Image (cartoon, rainbow over all chains, first blue to last red; front, side, top):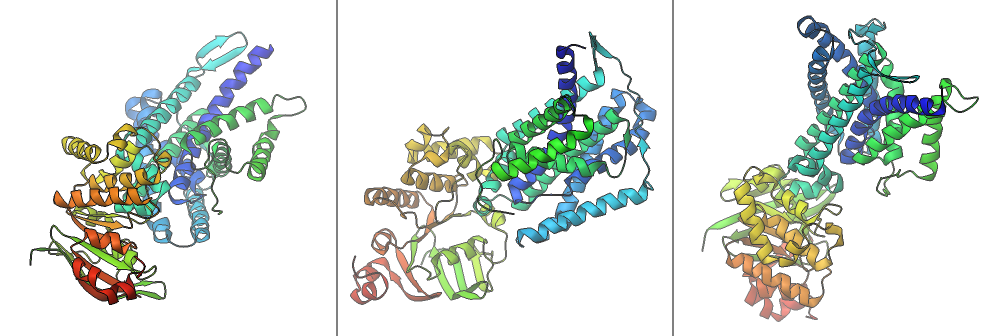
Length: 304
Length: 241
């Protein structure tokens, strides 16, 4: 393999990984932006998304097959269902604590994470589940590099979701309300904005994006398990911090950067794949020390 | 006596353990400008916040156009036609002037024609906002920010507008300009409840005034009476003016 082959291959790997990180990081960043909560249950939402997608696809595939024709509608259904789960969690666990000290709500988020994690563990008896997709390895081969259609569809789907989200935030009145709440919540109330509804909407959007990533990860890796959300939750948090937590373009950028960094980092001499988490979290520590506002973040004086 | 738009009876509010409002009663008649005066910490802003629902009343009754709104949510109160332009302007910095105005029109978001009509009206009142509509609101000067805050509040076509210290931090000629706008709004049919520290300016504009001291109304009367009564001016309104 030539250097170019390696670059193209790692670029593909990095983009796929980065897509997952970005989609999950978006929910982290949106929720942080609007209510200043680091939602540590968000990685588990991604995991639940994968399992909900698994269940839905099991039914849908009997009708539409287990190719993209079955997977895409299953993904949309899973996104909707998990979006509502996010709203429900927000309503039950977070909303009563919105005016409480930030630390209380943070601890509740850890509690929600444990509830989701353990519930799925009990339901699945802690087993790996084979994701029932029938996608093959067909694709485009260029020299030594092989890029599957699955990989291309995933990067494409992520791009579509991000563009849709960007338009939603930039152009619609609800997107503007989300940004305004992150600037001044009480001023929004005085504009006649039902702040609780907009917060719920934010949780819906963030959770459904994480579910999309969960379903795609299931399809891509072929198996899912109850602890798959833990590490990606931390990685997505890292991505959000890289981009600047609270910033939506920052979350997209941070996720992609982290994905690329991990895949290229493993190509360094004497460094193997087992080092990729060291890269990610080493970077997180450096950033938190030297540039806690990230690449695109606003300077924020308030501390967690 | 004309029709009453806003009626408050025995209003009490706490901030934690601080008894901020100790029984406030007042009336705002339709089409008038009523002003709340008093020193810092007298409870003027708290009164406005309690009316608009940001702060909960501990006791008392607030009635707007015949409907009780004492425990209503802020967004529901806005929908009824009562808007509150808060102290410190509180415009959304980091968003454009146009976006700020869009958010002001959140409650009538479905009605495109109405929104256009309101925008046009606001741009006629404040042509500068039209010129700077695509700029970040943070880049506006203090006076322009106040214009944006008032413009944003007008997007709903309110029946009653609560204005908290619109003259704060502005140069005298800008204060005059803002007061002129408030008078114009009032002449076009908006009832106004104005909170001011600058009693001289407020009493020249208002029809009726209430003076607050430590959460109570200590004096009330026609602006002309308040303005001319030496003892009141000396005791409550800063005799220096």
